[in-house]
Every structure is written in C-alpha cells, then in structure tokens.
Amino acid sequence: MTPELQFEHYFFKRLLVDTRLPDGGQALDFEYPLEVSTAIELYPLLGDENRFQLRLIIERDAADLPPGAYQVEVEVYGIFRASGDQSQADKEKAVRLTGAPILYDAAREHLLAVTGRGPWPALMLPIASFVPEGSDKST
Image (cartoon, rainbow, N blue to C red; front, side, top):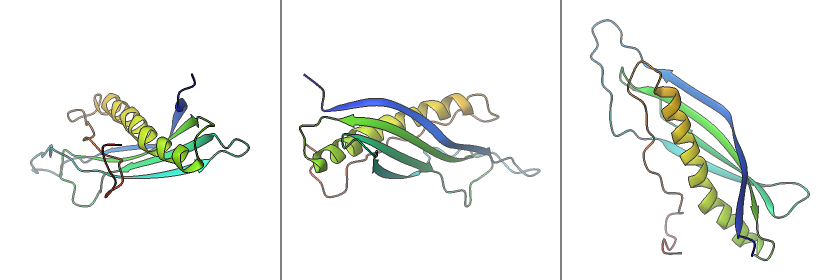
C-alpha cells in the first residue's frame, strides 16, 4: 500500500542568523521564550498533479531585539508526493498539515547547529502549530 504522503527532499533557500551584540555596558538578555512568525505557501509542481513544493518562512521580528538575541530569517522548501487516489483538496491539506511541521523541525535542528557555535546559547525554535484556526484539530 502506498502511503498517502511521501517526503522526497528539502533544501534551505535562505538562512540568516544575526547576533545582536551589546553596545558598551548593555546587559545581555537571552530572552526566552522567543516568538517567531511563520508563513507557508504551497505550489503544485508542473507536469505532476501529485507532487507539491511547500515553502515555509520563519522570521523573528528584528525590531527591539535586546543584546544577546538572534535575529532569524529562514526560508525552507520541501518536495512532497501525495497519493493519486485523493482529491486535489485532500492532497493539498495533507501536504500543508504534515509537510509544514517536517520543514519546521528541519529548520529547528539547523538553527540549533548553527547557533550552537555562536556567541550566545543555542537558539531553539518554539513549538508551532500549522493547523488552520477554526478547524477541527482532531482530524
């Protein structure tokens, strides 16, 4: 039996990690928990109605970040294949609900590795939900 969704691969298009250095006598503030914003976009791949490209953008608002904080911008893409025996809407829903957390976890691990070698403690992204507001979370 073919799974409803297969994860083919992912890649990072953009990764920005900027350390906010203190000016003179400013105290460091490692500010936990941190907040990020996310956005997802889904594109069908040309020539195959069962393959999709999911784009996930993760950003931390750079305004008013204290010294000791990381400014973060991540853009990661994933390629997914959905089972052909689903409706197009069900395929897209499966890719969004399953694919976005996969890409988010990949970004979390990548940022942990990069910031683990930085001047401040390693940055771990907070838990995020990609279930649309108002939808039944039990499905």
